[in-house]
Image 1 (cartoon, rainbow, N blue to C red):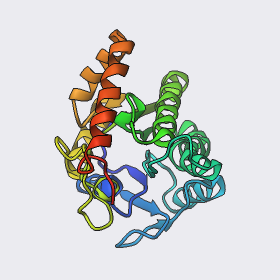
Image 2: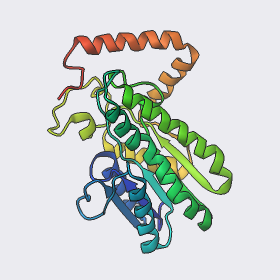
Image 3: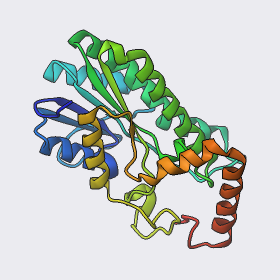
Image 4: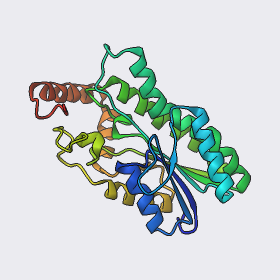
Length: 255
């Protein structure tokens, strides 16, 4: 799909990947780019809490009323908490609501419109952790695995009905999620990290070629191949990575 003259919606658009996606879609000649976030993005947009189905439905209805259609919906908002077994249930619920349920809410709200107009495109932001693991966060790992699985299910069930789906799985991206609010957070993911603009470029190319899996870090494909080829060996490697991170505060990603 070419983005020229298309109506696009991006959630989590106030900063990071979402902001870069919105800017790139506009540069590609989209007829409209509606930026949505918990706080209204700079330059205008729509306030939307993606963890609430009513908010997502109101966002879709608003765009349809304004422009008559939605060609591309990027369900991009996400959060991370460094949490393990001790994470309270509220943290699990919050992370699952934003990182997974938001994709479900978006699909339920927008797919009927896309079917009626003859087709459309969904880009769901997951993470390389959805294919592999975030060793210091159980909540993030599980929610992102769910996001990947749901995107795959959507592709299987709606492709023949004109709905295309891409699943974005970046590794380290130089955004506030990785760098922290002050931009000085240390993390083992900084090495090899890419810009949000690079991610946006990869997304545009994937939309044009209708590629399902979007990997701004191509090495992630090899990591996943190793995981599926010998899971016990891969798990042993992840345990070594976890031990290295635990032993070096410069790698932990602490604020």
